[in-house]
Image 1 (cartoon, rainbow, N blue to C red):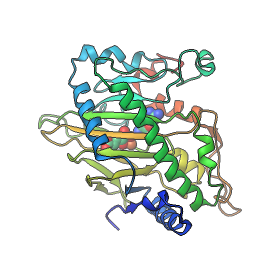
Image 2: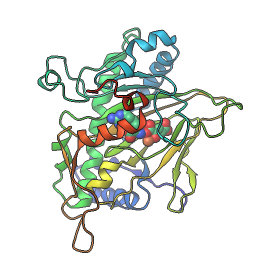
Image 3: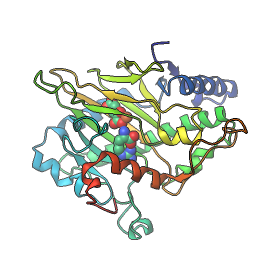
Length: 324
Ligand SMILES: N=C(N)NCCCC[C@H](N)C(=O)O
Ligand SMILES: O=C(O)CCC(=O)C(=O)O
Ligand SMILES: [Fe+2]
């Protein structure tokens, strides 16, 4: 019970219904016991990962003033570059020792939701210095959203709701694709400054590619930190708080953190799957009963996301970039 399950999801890409059911049951068990698992048999190629890694390394190696041309703290739509210490995932610890690039669902400036100044809606901000960047990232964003929807169909099957329940809610989603660079920890770095402080994710599911450096840790039911080591060719999948709310805690949103490795750079690439901003997040049918009433009040995706952002971004606490 001390290592995370590895689930082969390739049957989800075949027509055979028994195969779908077997994968759905394995995912259901992993989400109830851990809220964390690895997937293999997914369609993201090794060549794609190599290209993304190369682009991430080139971007983060740019001089600070180049990266800050797309400073996320100056973005109304929460897109672009976050320098070291922009985010504080564990508010009881120092700011995170990592830098990030965030992109979301691209909406042109004349889209009605952007004109209406809906929070978190707007155009992506890509580093134009790097050739081929925009095409690679926009294509990858679509592929990751497709992979998330494939997993969410298996989850819908396990929960006994309509198979396309999530597909309908992930049209023009809030989902974010992020690239993270963890600079090497020095022996002089304070022991409690983490790459990413302990936290639970905000969304429905997170799909994480991590390189071979290691450092991701997950809390087990006893509250102990266990390693989630890199396994070549896999993604780490975890349940976020919106899915915990939807499922009335049938599925666990489990605390995790990153201890930056000593003396090596680490790169990771999470995709945070989050539905359309107006999606209602309230207890799903079949997840409550008389002796298991709903634990959480109903909310919407956008309301919930903004409340969480306000806790972990210092610049948002000060009320800057009000409308996202
Ligand atoms: N829309 C999102 N998620 N934006 C990026 C924030 C990432 C922080 C976080 N762990 C999370 O769970 O989102
Ligand atoms: O970089 C990682 O391995 C995990 C990052 C993470 O948990 C997050 O950004 O939410
Ligand atoms: Fe996380």
